[in-house]
Image (cartoon, rainbow, N blue to C red; front, side, top):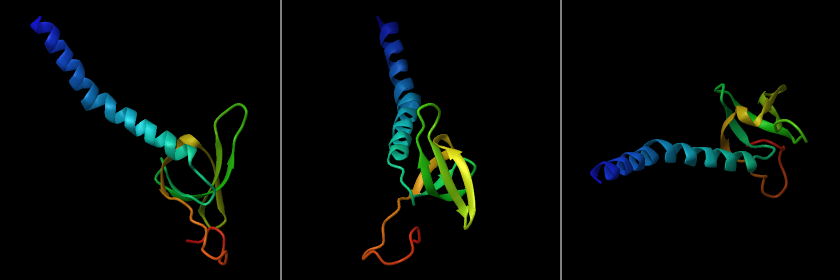
Amino acid sequence: MQDFFLLLAVLGAFYFILLRPVIQQQKLRRRDISRLGIGDEVLTTGGFYAIVRDIRTQERGPLELTLEAAPGVLLRATAEAIARVTMPYEAPIGGEGKTGQR
């Protein structure tokens, strides 16, 4: 009986120490990707900051993004290349100003 409780304690510790944080991180990443919009600033898995310029969904295959790493430098990427959204786009108040400017 003691062995059973010890096994349960080890499995519980394994879940809370290793599995739960990974599951929460994956859930947060999926939420960020689903909320991704044009104009958002993102950090890529390669360590580059970029602004989302276009989002294309396809019947088959991954979500395709066009990222602007620098003025005039456009990159094609998949959603898996996004590590996190660093700054969601906020439209300028009053409608004046350049689109995509922060």
